[in-house]
Amino acid sequence: MATIQERLLDELAGDKAYGVLLMLQMDGVPETLQLVVATTELDEKAGGLRDKSRYLIRAIGVQEHRISVGMFGSLDFTNDHPLLDQYNTTPVGLFFRGTPDDTNALMVDILQAYATTFGPWRQIPQYLNVNKPLLSLLGSGGDLLGEMPKTLSEQLVKVLEQHELEHKIVEGESPDKLDEHNRSQMMKALIIDDSYIVALDFNVEVLGKV
Image 1 (cartoon, rainbow, N blue to C red):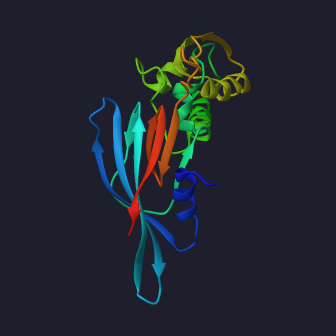
Image 2 (image 1 turned 120 degrees about the horizontal axis):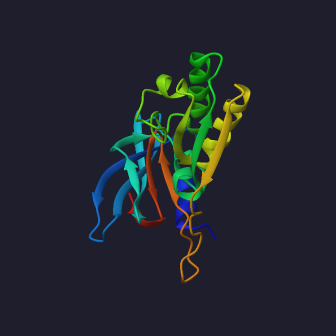
């Protein structure tokens, strides 16, 4: 038997299916958000959208969010997303030493590696050393490049090696996967088009058929 979350996703899966985020509000519990989502279907005969169901999504243990109300085309709950790297992977400090033959080319390669890792979800200079302009930093002969998720450091190490620069990685503490009650502490993401919520967990309830 399908879970309520699976029912919600199924109702949004069709070619003519659309969702509408009707409301977003803080819950009485700290770090908790409530979303009211309507599922609809394009009714070509009526020339509009036909309401199907309404759901309450509760985000528990919210870490960050960027979300707006209105119509959307896709919704997904995921444990694997670039937004989660900050929370679910080991943080590292990445240092480099040496002077590149072409500082501008190195900077371009770093920007490309950043975009490859995070897509549109994270923006430079997040995770990078901002004590100096990036071009000056890369031409300084050596410094802290940034404090970042391990996923980004792995991409940037490849870039540093391509430009024949030395590097050193200092790993921080790995995130706790379970709490004392064996409950998962790994963060999850709710992605609604280009909006998102990062939280510890999500609970979905049916508000009723429309």
